[in-house]
Figure 1 (cartoon, rainbow, N blue to C red):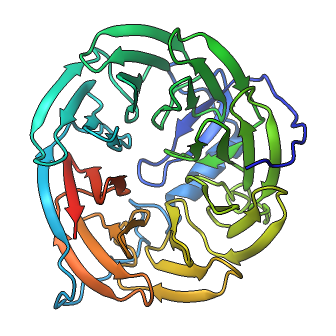
Figure 2: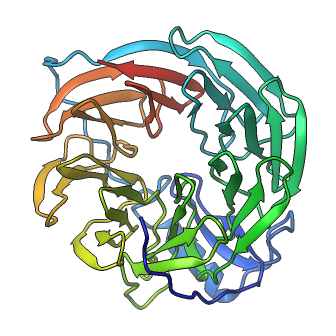
Length: 410
């Protein structure tokens, strides 16, 4: 992929994100990102907080719709649960498992890293980082990278020996990613920082001014090989960074802010963009699903759908979990609607993932649903006691959440 490079304005002002809701996690961005206590809020911020308390999109509201009851299902395809295991509590953060091709690595807020045999689910190793963690780990070539609540990037061997530590510009809410030479971390202030894999030396820092109000993102960055980083940003912006120097190669608007209030104008790309076969796609909260030509950044198509969950794609379609819990499929070529599954609305449905030729989503009750990629019909169901975005691990999927990790397969 060789997109056109264009310069991007930089901002060196540090900011702090204060969480307003654990579920949807809207936060106010203010100065002094590294201060441990909330800053004083302006009258505008207070009004925004009051507005959030009555918004039906966020849990805890009296106006939140009731979860759609599941219909009885006679499975047509057997969704198999290979194994289950307990993991550390998330402590209000989001943790995803990591798979290095041979072993599964999980972490929890308590700082414990577990190493699991992917065939049996049995714990075969692990270590204590001795700090509280705020996201899952990144693993590559015998190194484990973790991020602490205090805003640090930590490097360990798989036996738990500390190799180096680096200070981040703020707390990170998503796992570090690495190609084996460079480690990339996105922090809550919107910055992306790259470090040397072996020494921990900072290589570059990408900064961009953030809007006053934004969705708390726990995964809006995707490293592609050793070339580029896809980055979803507040304000509906998709940026492609060069991994070598952190320069913005191109930018595009997934969605455009509209409305009279800060709440109305939130159109953040709060989930990971995806790339496949020369096409880059991303979705925005209160915005659109948009796809672009990866080489030229030329828009291909856009469709109105709000999502802070995420997307998946195969050769034919793009699948998205909307913020109301509906799961939708769009044709990759022209954005035509292929199907819509409304049977899981308001069930806290996570982002979709592909399992063979099927689509898998999990809901807030720890139930996994297997959908047809052609029609969206539910073909199988399994109670796994875990809820989160499924992560590919060979031919299977891993789901971590609710204090559990489970393996799904066919």
